[in-house]
Image 1 (cartoon, rainbow, N blue to C red):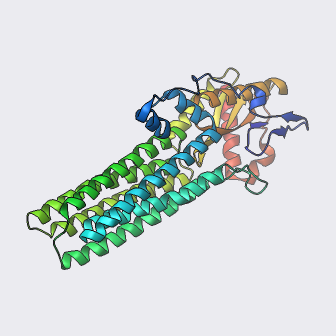
Image 2: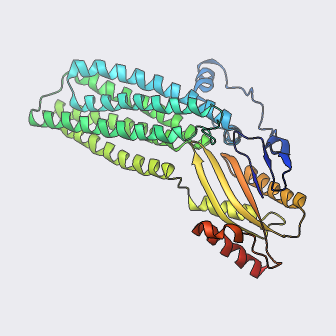
Length: 387
């Protein structure tokens, strides 16, 4: 038997044909944890306004709420993406004005990348809006994977911006020209750093709270952009001392930096698309499930990300002489333990295997269908032998 909580299904039918209402909340998992007053004070005056908009003060209670409530996490992600769009948009507009005045390739490279970052937020925003939609008969796991698809667009845009920056820098390297309006270029570099770092702080913090690797990657990308904005100051210094060649060199260095970002982003998105997780997370699921009273062993544990939510599937072995009601209660205890201890966990499927101490092979009927089923059979047999 298996116990599960798919997003589009509130019940299941057991092997005996009995219908069970299997809503997560109906089994007592919709806990109302008191994490403090939701109408907490953000302070007064300008500081209070900034805190209320950007949540500049951190609190673990809010992080627990975001991890436990997928809907709340999605809404928080949407809010932060809109703020990031606004901040990067304003930063880009200011830098475009300075690029037009100065003709700086280093600053142009930084501006193009900032504009690319703003565009990166659009597919991510669409993905988060899709994540709010309920699962359907076709998309039975919901639309969380759209977040990983958005990650592909982010990687492509980063590659494009790197190529454009290299092209412009090489052109300037062949025909170096001194910068003009140096104070304005320096000011624009500082503006770029401040704008990108503000976005980085918001996205990295929120991405880690809600379990969104795509948002964390975008935030790290923004942070690196902020540092490369400061590198434009080196180009300003070079021109001030009569070395205009420094300008395209800085542009090339920014391009190289973006290549490293691209590599990291590709690896991260590959992991998500291939349903890879930290092995320690799998071990933790095994340990938590195995510690539940009545569970003899745990096997075939699978964990994957659906956007910024986790799904877990596992098999537990229980005494085969237990009545269905007690086996069901053990499975529910396992789900209860996992939901309480694993942040971002939204879906848990628990399959109950009888221990087999009576000598019967309960998987014999399906063993010939796949090697995987045969692996399950061997695992159950070994468990029975040690019981």
